[in-house]
Length: 268
Image 1: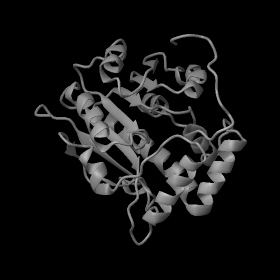
Image 2: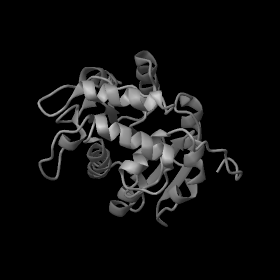
Image 3: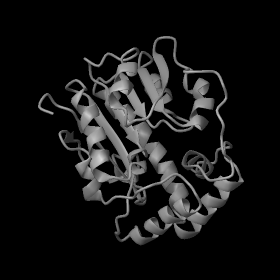
């Protein structure tokens, strides 16, 4: 932990991690978060289902990486701890897994101790940092992870807070360039696609609703824009799809968060 002082938390405005916690049925949220969450639900009734599907995608992706021999995970923008965090899933299957969480959110910092409950065989660490600061992040992560061996780079629901396309792409490129061949990039992102099941305009209104209430800035991107974030890697089938449709355990309705997993090769 960088320090033990409890940071100041403003509960008068909605916070993306707490709104997400509310949709997941958690208890770490306040009236402003619930009001914002309900306002989004009125515009986009399926968003709570989407939150649960995003969490389910995390579990499937981590288990998939375990089957590919990955035993190290760097989880950027970790968010509030809830059921089946990255280390929970990984160490349940492979107890020796090592996980580093990164977040610069004072609310997450207060819950970092919960994130650090690791299996005896493995390791778990928390870094207080901004994901834009890729070199300090990687340097700190290297205390726990061996960056010369494959790593699962987890970027779930975090790049949608980087509003500039070029900056988001550069963050991913800098991280990918430092990881060993055989590493994997796991990414999920708010999407404004319009399909038979999804209303892209409703998603854009929902995003604006949160920002108008003073919430964390957020950007929905198209599937094509999300796929560009995987530049320099090789996408794993089925490519960039709705989180609910990435290797599902059973058929699920499409949800407005898109995801993908890719392999980092020696040529990246």
